[in-house]
Image (cartoon, rainbow, N blue to C red):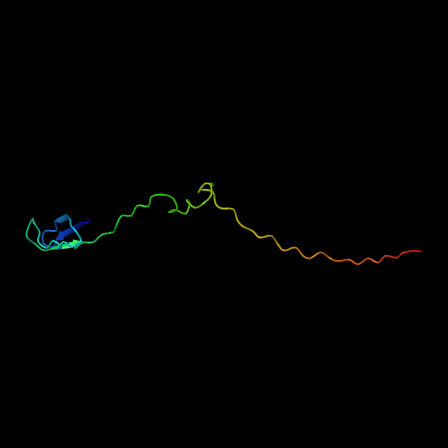
Length: 90
């Protein structure tokens, strides 16, 4: 079941309540009788296992070593063709 946090609008006291999704939200502060409102905050996410960091998908090289620059070889010009004339003496 989720835990909800409420804050009193009068005394600013914060209260946590474990409730079902179908339960009605709390509306009255137990400390002063003021109006309670839900407090929304960021959800903590924990990634466990491999594949969540860019270094996890790399090979066995260390993360501090920058990747080698990739270069493409320059195209080689076609070989010059030479014609040879052969003269045969009979």
